[in-house]
Image (cartoon, rainbow over all chains, first blue to last red; front, side, top):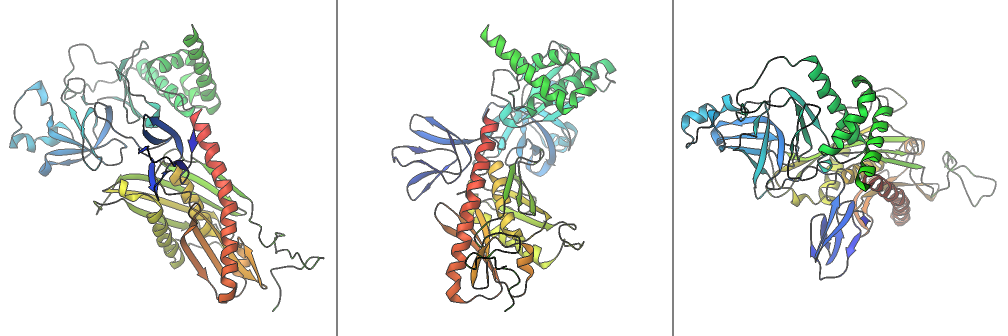
Length: 271
Length: 242
């Protein structure tokens, strides 16, 4: 059920106030335009487009905007409502050494991550004012090397078991819950370094074409407001083969391949 | 006084205005939501020949001082150089600054700012074409853009202007009526559900006896504007949902 700001959600005093609602003289009123969600006695209104609302355990892709040595932390842009914090104590040191961080490490902070670096991380906790704190204490997370970053609406990426995908077409995909998507070549087995050693060898043209094609496919799906997950992206990638990569950014073809993907996925669901 | 604005029609009882409208008729209103990709929320409002683009960024981290209690609202109003009949750089004029400050106050009280401490919400308004009632069109456009961005707001804020010409209150003033000598203009921005007035701005002199009539005319105008705005939002979210 849809409602607009100022609309009465319920006059029943039994219900609890959830997100997107407020009390106006004891009447529960909506404060955003969206659908009403009811969980037992909790009523909330979910807006259809909003900034990223982080939850603990989310995988995010973000960009370092500031190194705050005096506070022993980095500030990360994750298109969240407030800048995300990455504490020095929640990163792995290069080489995977496990120990307390010293003053030398504080001085070395800029050599770990500097302004403009892209990182993948996991949400560790949420501060009282709503800012997120992330960690990279896993070899999966860390600095991102060569690849393409895409920004889509966070509502298009669902929370799932896995956000790291090696697609059959030969690219590595990170679907950040914050709507930032990272497309790169797969890291070969055993050299995962937590992202501190970055491979800067030139990427062959054929691989770059595949990455561009995946990027354009995701853009086409996002334009049609279709959910992004490995299945939909794979299906769209296969369908897009009948066009050249450069044609995929034409608005007419974008609509066409997204619709074909939608139909194909519906058929597969029925089988 | 010379009757320049209200033209007498054949039947004296129903005078028409210079653009052929009846005294209480609002110009045709077209709204669109989500017109820009990169912004968190955006809208386009066309009120007769007045066209306004609004973009909203935020809530995001403040650049500078922040408030630990609530979110800071930052409104910027700008008239395009080509928006009026004479080409002029209207970037830093007093009127624009005044409107920016008024809009900041309106939305500071309408948005539930206490939900987002330490953050900031930017609202940018650009008048692409100006044909009277710019301020009212801006309130409507900003309100739609805020709703598009999913920012919690008390109600769909709507606004309309009214004036008083030839002993008759008229709704939704256009540029010709605005520029005619001595026309009092009253712009009301309100929360329609509670019938609370958020902003009342007036220029020109008006007799106290007539004030209520003019206010009623503006409030009536708000109601018709609100109907179209709500319809647009509903259509937009229905589209997004599918």
